Length: 155
Image (tube, rainbow, N blue to C red; front, side):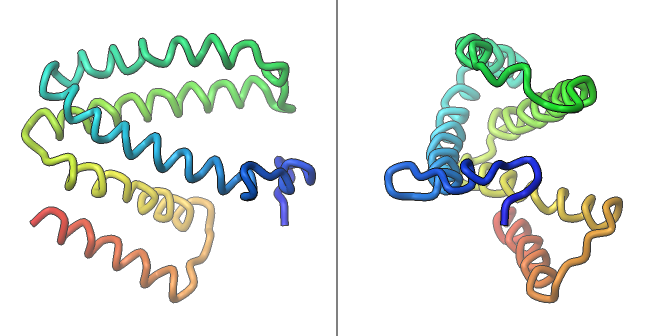
């Protein structure tokens, strides 16, 4: 079932024999996994704030490529979308700085990265508290197990 944002053809798109959403998800895992390891190396050479500055500068070539997209003018609620995207960037940037601080203060990337990727726990909490979404029993168990994972990883 596709959402109102996603078109039917996009939902059926295939890349390398996989549904496009899965191919992009797997690519994200590979890129973010590599990013986490490279971040540890960068954090050994520069402080967290400098790391974030150069992380942002590294996004500039991608921004130039994306700015050429024919879909750049899309969206029905453009102003509010841009405002939320900007706010998302601030949250992500501050999160990156905290991540780089954790690595720079001696955190092992093999512990810091898996701990920080449990951020969806915050999303689940916010969705239940403010959007009134309900969790099934297995989802509640998953939430508890994720909290246990954070504890075990921190030991």
